Length: 180
Image (tube, rainbow, N blue to C red; front, side, top):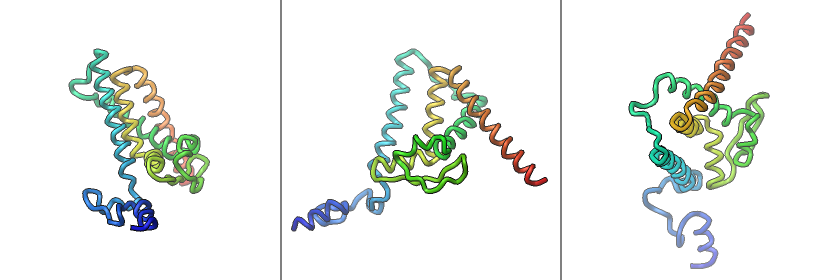
């Protein structure tokens, strides 16, 4: 095999000029950074495992019957707001900037960005621009906070829940004003 063929095999993800086959066949085209996704999923689960170990090590107890309805609503509304804030707001673009490219500024409040780079950088870009993806991480941290510091967690969640209500009131007022 020539050096040129070997180099081609390295750049196109093949080995010895042969296409890869197996469990990732059909995904191994460079567009889906599966290894980076695996690392992110591993980090997410590692954080959960550390949380569980810390609860046992500190004598804290996990809720036996889960989280109460009031906390679910509070944390759900707060997660909605915080995930949208992180994934879309212009004011938090500094968090996303190392992993994204600005496409356009949609409004003074919101920007449109696309993940950039490859591998882990691109995966982080996809995570921080997706409010649904961020929601899972944020909901987890809020839930962990309920176990370790419920008062502080509820206070922080309340701030984001109040902002969510305020946002909806602003939008409703704007819609009614435009209608009149």
